[in-house]
Image 1: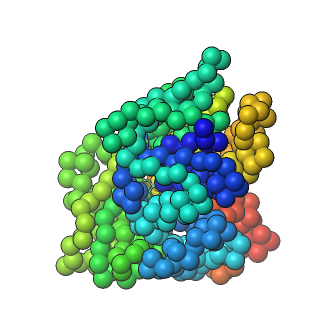
Image 2 (image 1 turned 90 degrees about the vertical axis):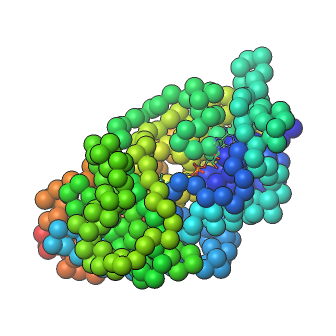
Length: 394
Ligand SMILES: Cc1cc2nc3c(=O)[nH]c(=O)nc-3n(C[C@H](O)[C@H](O)[C@H](O)COP(=O)(O)OP(=O)(O)OC[C@H]3O[C@@H](n4cnc5c(N)ncnc54)[C@H](O)[C@@H]3O)c2cc1C
């Protein structure tokens, strides 16, 4: 009998498992994928996520992986160019972008070191329930054999297409249409820290990652997905050429070092996050377009909120546990609502004149520029920018 079973061992599941085990709980962490594998995702971790890694004692391992710190951001849109660095949070001014096979392995190793039982290649296919319908465990297949395990709480950390969410029939509480599609690959010897380029119908980014590689991403509107996927490589290069010509020049004469990855399936939703004996964390409960690169940091934030609510209340007393879970859901929605709305705003890929006028004022002042990069990182909400200085400039 475990206290908690986590289904999914990446940036939501592994930290929850680690934090619960550090608090003395007996935890099982399962994933259908082999440990140390990559996943379809780029990997920018904004400062709030970096601060979580530092609090958990894992930032040194990320640095030691050879992943450079991103303490200089360039953002270009229309005639505007902002350059600087966020003010940061908890002393963390830099972002990092470790490859997912690097980051996820660090998180799973930390969970194992905290005493979590980790099983990879283990696919959950069903849930165990008691007579009242309360979830009391999982069943599935591991190495070709059936297994079942019981716990006070089953946590689905199994991504946007969550099996756990499907099995408990977690309803959507918020749902919006898909807005973009994303394509990315890696380039060698293309110096960059963190560069963002925006234009009507387009978003391009360059991000330095492990092994001296630079990740270059391009976003196009969802309405172009059918057309773009017929020759994605051409569309990707064209998007970079027209939106970020200076970056395009640096790519000239070079070939990507990996294949082109892409997706047109970036859903926007909140699901009900909890019920009797179950909870959803990370993308399983809430997903949004990756254009603002918030998913990893938000998964860490959810892990902190959930574990904060569970400590001292995860055990035999079902009513107490359910009350803790309800609090988690409420706090999750409050914490992630504003970032969800601003992400949808960016993902429409239509830079409005009102925002451009604001940015023209911001670019005149390094302090306002730093506050703006705090907004990009999800540290501040838009209100923070409206200082007397900005109002005077406007
Ligand atoms: C193109 C793209 C670019 C992105 N770029 C960024 C970025 O730059 N920065 C950022 O912060 N976020 C980014 N994101 C978002 C980020 O990838 C996700 O928010 C993050 O991976 C969520 O983590 P998770 O642990 O909730 O889910 P996932 O990373 O999806 O992990 C879920 C795990 O559950 C396992 N699983 C699923 N079903 C089962 C089952 N039945 N049994 C056992 N295991 C199961 C899977 O194998 C998987 O390992 C991007 C996403 C995409 C698609």
